[in-house]
Length: 337
Image (tube, rainbow, N blue to C red; front, top):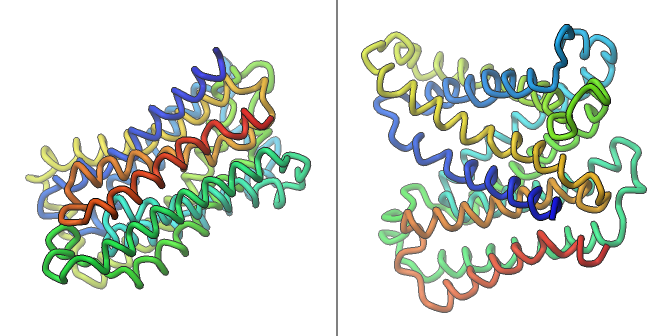
């Protein structure tokens, strides 16, 4: 029963993340670099800090925790900076492929690599059991099927129909960017692996133990994204977005909501893992589960936003088959284990 509760919590977090781009689409007048930075302030600083504070017992501090193991802290933040590069290209993948297909390819790559590479980088290769590896393979198979559906979509629609659903649709360019985004985004889980012990042990509830490391990863990502956004502000003369205070009442709540929804996936991952401690397989595979569910829900949003409008029944059937495979992959390691 506890395992089911943990999986449901992770699923709720995945649904929230997949919904985070809905409020972003309603932001008025700001350039991409400006609203990306502002929502990132909430997604990568404010809410992760509030979450990390839940892991700190009374009378202790986060700084005390980080300075006690500076090497682990620095590695965790370093991989967060690499993940930040993935976050930047992640947005481009959705620009060229749409929310559904862009997130599917990027998050699918992220799911597989994040699960496999984390034990390799941290030296815990014993965690790569047969059940975990099979689960990753099935997840990647589901992503591949969705990719086939995307290719079928690209071939079946006219240029006008493609741009009606996704304005800058470009399948080839989008696939390249999405694969790069997925590879770099996998560094998030590697960072969490290096920061696995950054908690107060028995004084921290199991469901909050990964939140201090999550803060360091997102802080590293914020540094990368902020540097790029300020560069774009300078290049495009859009620093005036921040002084357009008349838009704050409309845009700030939308940025805060987007940030909260985005962070919910990792808050949910931490809470969910607190219920999976009796299953070493699911603890290792939890990252892949989160990414697979993110892909599933992003495609639900893609259907709602009519990104698959005009596609044939055969294309939709292939898409649904890919989603079913992803859902099965979330439970497969536990069945095999």
